[in-house]
Image (cartoon, rainbow, N blue to C red; front, side, top):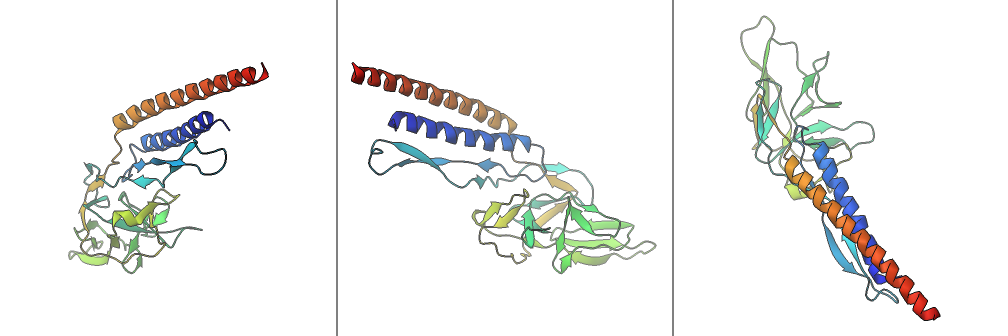
Length: 244
């Protein structure tokens, strides 16, 4: 294969993958707790007869940018944002791992008092978090959930959110959009994780940066296509010279 055509085609393919990553980030610019994906590639020279001057690129596993997003003040007691590093634990559903981990904290209660994030139950240190009927609920900075019972006066602790604090490099994004450890293990709680009630963490995606990157990648893709067209012309001229 023409090495110029091969290298340009592989470059165009990787550019398209990078565009998909940027487009996905842009679509989640308003998703609570979302962490931007970063795709990167490295050049790789091919070995073997006929490939001595051919270069391809290897796409490394996409990693997340775990920089903290801005705090959004909601004053809703069941909205929480993590200060610094750490994750909230969710129960996996169907074929998912037993536990998933997230930075989103926009919880909701169902009719049975079970605490949910989307379709997944929020985990406490003793299992899925369930709240009895209450007049008022609060979440402390270390994840303790307290309620004031209906007609009651004293505040009662009903559980503690399971908060974990692995190294960010150990975590990878699951197909659900939440995170799991690369080793697949269940993480132990970490009582040093701090949260803020009445706040949510915004996505750390910069819409402007993603748009600029998409435009730059589009230009790179066009350049690769131009190189492919030029390589094809060179090959045709070479064939004509051989036939002459």
